[in-house]
Length: 507
Image (cartoon, rainbow, N blue to C red; front, side):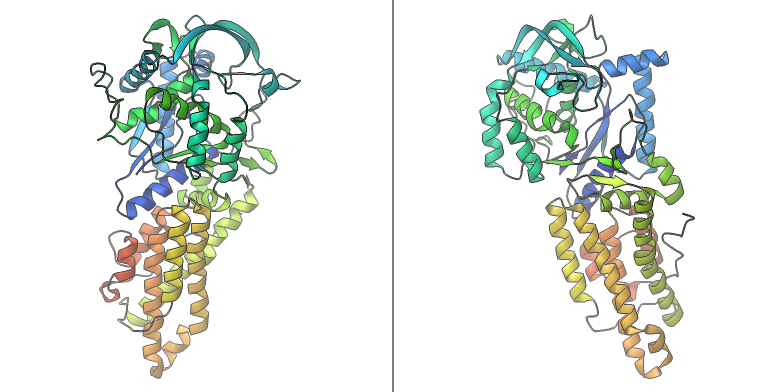
C-alpha cells in the first residue's frame, strides 16, 4: 500500500489544512498496517519555485536556508502529532533532482517537449499562467485572488494536448479513479474543452531557484512538474544514474510505483488529475490507482487562507486538547471529500463526544472490573454486545475501504454509545448487590471488556495515544489488531482503573 500526501510548500508554517490531509493519510496508513498491509506513507516539502526565492529574499536568507528551516518545522509538527510517515521527501534532495532531470529528458527523447515563446498572465503566488477566461474582468488569479502580471518569454512545453482523449478514456474506464464523484465530474468538465500544452520550464534569468533542464541549463523545471515527480522518486522506480534504457521507465516491477492513493485538496485537483497523469503517459509509466480529493476548511463562512489571516494553528489546539482530540475533530467533522467549517464551538462539541461517550465508557468499565472483580475479567458466556460489535466491524471496514473515513469513525462511536446504553440497561451496580445475579454481572463485565478491546482497535488509527493508554489499562503492551481484539481470551487480561481519557477542559 503506497499512499501520499501532497508535499507542502516550504514558504509558510504548518496549518490546519496541512494537518487534516496528513491526519487523513496517517489514519488510512495505520488502518492498513493494522490489517497486515506493507505500507509506504509519503509526505514532505516542496522546496523550489519563485515563492521560495522571493520569501527567502524577504527574510534575508538563502533559499536552501529557508527550506531547511521549514522542513524542520514540518517534521517537528508531524512528530508532535504522531504522524507515522515512512518517507519524508524534500525536492532539494540529490536523488529527487536526478529523477526530475531523467523524467523530463525521457519526455524530450520521446518527442513530447518543444520550445516556444509564450505570452500570458502569470501568478507568482500560484506559480502558473492563467487564461483571460480564467482570470475574469478583475484580472486576479481564480484560486487566491492575487494579482497577475503579463509575461512574454521562451518556455519549453509538454504536449499535454496529445493525451486528452487517452485521459478521458481512462477516467471513463475507471469510474472510481477520482473520489468523490463530484470531483471526477469536475475533471471531465474541464476536459470537455481543448486541452492546452503545458509550460514546463522557467528561464533562469527570471527564476534561478529550481532544477535545471538537462537539455537547456538556462531553464529550470516548472515547480509543479518538479513537485509531482516526488511521488515517483519516493517509489524507487527510477534510477537516474543508470544508462539510458535501464533507468526503470520501461519496467517498474520491484518498485512501489504506481501509488495506490494520492491524497490532495480540491485546489490542486487539476494538477494531479490532468497534468500528472498526462505527464506519466508521456513517459510511458502507469498511472496512480486512485486520487482522493478533500475539500477546504473554512472559518465560520470564510475559506481558511494565509492571505486572509484566518489560519488556525494546529499546534495551539494540540497544546490545549492533545493531538488525538485534534485528529478526531478534523476527521470526524469533515465529510471525506467535502468542505467543513472550523469554529471553537464545533471543536468543543466533538471533544465532548470523546469525553462523554468513549472516555466515560472506558472509565466506568475499568472501574467496575476493578471494584467488583479485583481487576480480573470473568470468563463468562452470553453474547452481550456481540451483534453490535459484528455490525460495527462490518460497517467500519466497508466505510474505510470506500474512503468514507468520517462515516467509519461515526460507526465506531456508535458502538461506544451502544455500550453505554448496555450499562444503563444491565445496571451492574444492582447486579453486584444481589448474590444471585453474580453470573449476570460476570456477563456484563465480560461483554464490556470485549467491547473496549474492539473499540481500542477501531479507534487506534485516529486516536493512537489514547488507545495505547486504554490498552495499557486493560493489561496489554499495545493496542491489539482487530482480529486479536475479537478473539483474545478475556481471562488473560489484568485491568487497572484508568483516569479520564479526555479530561474536561475550561471552554
